[in-house]
Length: 214
Length: 255
Ligand SMILES: Nc1ncnc2c1ncn2[C@@H]1O[C@H](COP(=O)(O)OP(=O)(O)OP(=O)(O)O)[C@@H](O)[C@H]1O
Ligand SMILES: [Mg+2]
Image 1 (tube, rainbow over the protein chains, first blue to last red):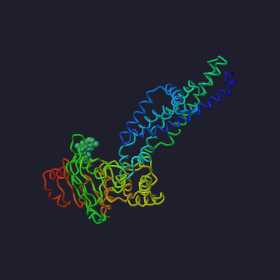
Image 2: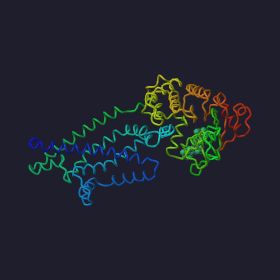
Image 3: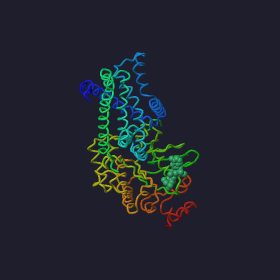
Image 4: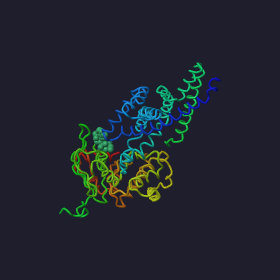
């Protein structure tokens, strides 16, 4: 394993980038996912349609294809972001489709009667969603969203393919120099495992913390 | 004529349902239902299962869309959707069979939510008023509890307090005691009787004939989506005019 120690800073730099990529794209995915889920349950047919099309298109496109399209396609049409930002956007948009579906399943666990009671006291659709439905829906889907975050963490490694120097890319570079794929990629793998284990722990903690008294 | 102030043209009725028609798919559930409820009047709606009582009740605050007909609250027509509807709904309190308290909020938060978010009252004031209402329905000591920690009767009283917190012009009750264990029915009915005595305008769907006798100004009997009979409780229970009503009463009063 001393090959890992010899290139330690390359690995930690890669890890930092992976963590940034994960955190930023997850934050974006969560935000977009909740909005898309809200669209899918809205009383406005057009919004529902847009939400459905969004989920269907992003869920059914491989992330690698999205990354390639965004990184090499956007500059073609004159939209130029830094590479890292582009990768964050592509991953966020992709994972948002999964978050949206998880949140929607959470919304479906909230009894319809509570939505009616919310409307009956004069709350509008947006208020009902924000104050009554979503707080309960999100509590119900902490675990599935944790799983999506774990998958997202792994998926960030695809950004290496379009040139982002994350943990996977760093491992790749070290391996080109040292030609010791087993220790190098086991090292990188342990890094991903550590992150995901932490996510799993946090998920359980949050789930218990926000549980609704039933 | 065109500049008459609204108050002087406002109707004498608090709630007016005019020729409501409603179908679910091909099933006609309400046929030309017209009902006027005066200010302070307590109307009890009874009738066999499937008569359309719940549907009619839900049409009164437009939780259910109507196919045709109008609903007026204190002379003002409820629009089909949008902010105008939300504003008028806030003035119609509704109590459901299943309580429908917000599970993630304490009883106090349940009651204060509407006043803060809809009426924009300061949180402090809303909470003080909420506590006073909880006291009035007898569960002030449960203010900090979550709905699941309350008995059915307490939950329903909390739900009544939540509706009252909006200072509604009328209260709608859809079988408020049907989901309760028998020993809890009276604590809820007592709150409702007090409300009636205090002059609240009420429309109550219930199978509790005792409540109808005690508190109703008028009993309205529905069957097959129509109002079949409407009379004061005394005449209705002692001398029902229609075969349908006699038949219904013999069934509910005999056990
Ligand atoms: N959402 C719905 N979709 C389809 N049909 C419905 C719906 N709600 C009610 N109905 C039908 O409308 C009719 C009237 O129902 P409603 O619930 O208003 O009756 P009710 O008088 O309240 O009966 P109960 O005493 O059993 O509560 C019934 O035949 C019922 O099956
Ligand atoms: Mg009913």
